[in-house]
Amino acid sequence: MNYRNIFLILGRELKSYFGSLTVYVVIIMFLLMTGYFFYNLLATFSIVSFQAQTDPMLAKQYQMLNINETVIRPLFGSIGIILLLMVPLLTMRLFAEEKKTGTIELLLTFPINDVDVVLGKYLACLVVLLTMILLTATYPILLIALGEPEVVPIATGYLGLVLLGAAAISLGIFTSSLTENQIVSASMTFGILFFFWLISYSVPLVSAGLGQFLSYLSINDHIESMSKGVVDTEDIIYYLCFIALFLFLTLRSLETKRWR
Amino acid sequence: MIEVENLTKEYGEFRAVDNISFSVEKGEILGFLGPNGAGKTTVMRILTCFFPPTKGRAIVAGFNCFEDSLNVRKRIGYLPERVPLYEDMKVSDYLRFVAAIKGTPAKEVKRQVEKVMDDCSLSDVSNKLIKAVSRGYRQRVGIAQALVNDPEVLILDEPTVGLDPKQIKEIRKLIKDLAGRHTVILSTHILPEVSILCGRVIIINKGKLVAVDRPENLAAEGSRRMFLRINGNAPAIEQALSRMAGVKSVERELTAGEDNGFVVVFDDEKQGRQGIHSMIENNRWELLEMRTMEASLEDIFIKLVTKEEA
Image (cartoon, rainbow over all chains, first blue to last red):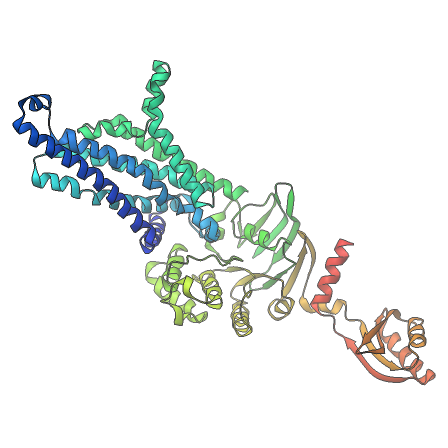
């Protein structure tokens, strides 16, 4: 590993990301979608709160009426799912484009290790992801300005989103290394993410032991507790393992390219 | 500087390079000649450590391309055939990136880039995006990125393809100037290019080595031919010529509607020449034209390649 080389690759990738229109479109669409969810959640919350003031029955029913539970937690859930939709569009170009245009031939004959190439590209995409996630901070900031939400679950919720996105990117960079077609890469990434997302659906259908295992594999179950303010090392380990596995597979995939 | 031993590369069933061995001395310019699909690019990709050979080994600047790939890659500059560049970067930014990634110290990068931009006459386009520059400039950016950081070995895959005659001249001069300080391997299917630039030529066809020699030696190989134009009875002349001592074969050559041109191939040129003179005198024919035919590399190339196939 050579930090200078990682940094050089990272810089070039970032220039390439922010030099093209794609990233801006992806970010804008992402903000529109998450903004839509935020608006609806908040509007519902304010209507229900308003009615609860005059209706004691409703107030009793919504004793737990709390902005963290009714706005922030579902919002994080939706942002997570929208992230899973958008990440494949960010990662698909990382290797596929270089293969299509042939620049991979020069890249892999420069005196740098494959690890540096993979990490540089990974980190560049992570920076884009962080930018996207950071821009959604307007929503909780609005809530803090207008109400009194608990801050800790917001912070841990963001940690969860970053981990979720970082995991999705590692999968995306792997599928991008498998093909020279960006659409193929994006489809594969989304397909596999979809599987990791909905895997817990089949939990009731299988034996208890297997069910527990399947729900452990589920990629967004692990941010559940984080959006409640609970950081469990088990969840963090899950994401770190996920990332390490797919970055390792990406390296292997580059290596087999050399063999063919 | 470069040692290639029994190099073989197979893609599945297809053998792209078949047991090729050669070596290149320091400071030499070696031409790599062959029809499209002969295996030139494959050999170059092995030398640049893009992929390893199936069998055999390649050593560049004392390091094995497979086992010590990083050390090899530090010492080479490579121009791939398709000139793959990052289209969305500015010329100068791109060259700066390549210089840095090749390990040029940060303080040196600017100077190095200015030098190669100067050498490749790129200063006019330094602030343009690569996708916006013309084919000729693009090719030169490709050469510039290979040259940046002054590598010991340069591997150029068809460096002049797609350029106009003036640009070709400039690039050839640039490559010629590199000899001595740098070891250069360049591939081409343009034969005059080889005679102009290269000290030595390797001809490969269908993955096999066909010939290794100096361009002038290769040219000399087929030069014992003479063109004659003689006024007289053509069939009689042809018969007389073919019966002469020292002559291997005679061919009628029809030029511009006249049937009195003959191409004579000698076994023994001295003996043959003398015979021709006395023959023409004795028969009272009239010698109109007599010249030695310089075999071009094209002829030799076609000869070698077809001989191989026969």
